[in-house]
Image 1 (cartoon, protein in one colour):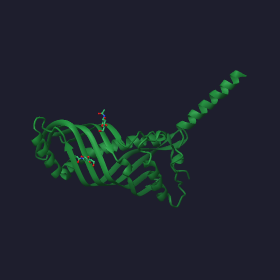
Image 2 (cartoon, rainbow, N blue to C red; image 1 turned 90 degrees about the horizontal axis):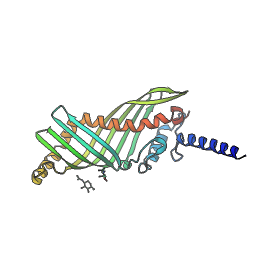
Image 3 (tube, protein in one colour; image 1 turned 90 degrees about the vertical axis):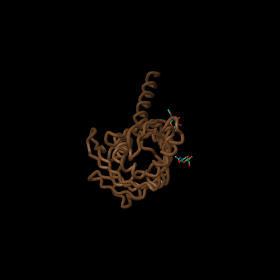
Image 4 (tube, rainbow, N blue to C red; image 1 turned 180 degrees about the horizontal axis):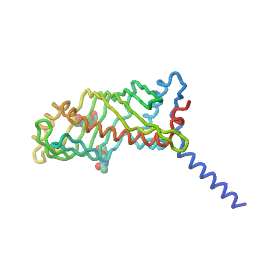
Length: 246
Ligand SMILES: *[C@@H]1O[C@H](CO)[C@@H](O)[C@H](O)[C@H]1NC(C)=O
Ligand SMILES: *[C@@H]1O[C@H](CO)[C@@H](O)[C@H](O)[C@H]1NC(C)=O
């Protein structure tokens, strides 16, 4: 008798744990492929996802994202400039506005137009080398505010089979972004010279568009690795049919 109860209990536990690991969060609406308003449905679904950025979405394998902490990012241009940023902390990702979304599920291609009114990025930086006409060698806390960030994002996936189910693996991400205004502050650029540090910060900010342009390829690579790393967990867990039922 007791044995049977234990066995039953064991089965229930097993069943429940399998169940939870695959459970789709009830607060996120699924969009059906046959829905004539699927675009609108997806915009709404993404809107409901962002409300859960603060705590993360364990069912999707998403960590807390408000703020999102990236342990380390490296940026360089040619061989003359190297920057490493540790504990990169991005605030206000939940201000994300999805302006438009287009996708072709047959071609596994997704296009999004998104907007962030405000992002703040703090980190510990280590910069060495020449950028524009400035020779830099410093480390310390860095803080930055980006206002009005528009981005067009194109994601391309390939299908693969896992058991009997088809999944998406995203390999390519293209970004075309426009930052309305960016202000950065690098503390301790010249360790014993606060005045020179302040002057240099001023010059950096006056030329921020050119600097961001020069670092664009490595900024894009860092964003791509972060975003693809995040969404790969979701698409590994759920098949195409589970995410977009017919
Ligand atoms: C990382 O940065 C955040 C935000 O500035 C800060 O709260 C946190 O203490 C930092 N963590 C480490 C390990 O430095
Ligand atoms: C970024 O914005 C915050 C909050 O408005 C402010 O406290 C901080 O000083 C700003 N940082 C820079 C580098 O302007």
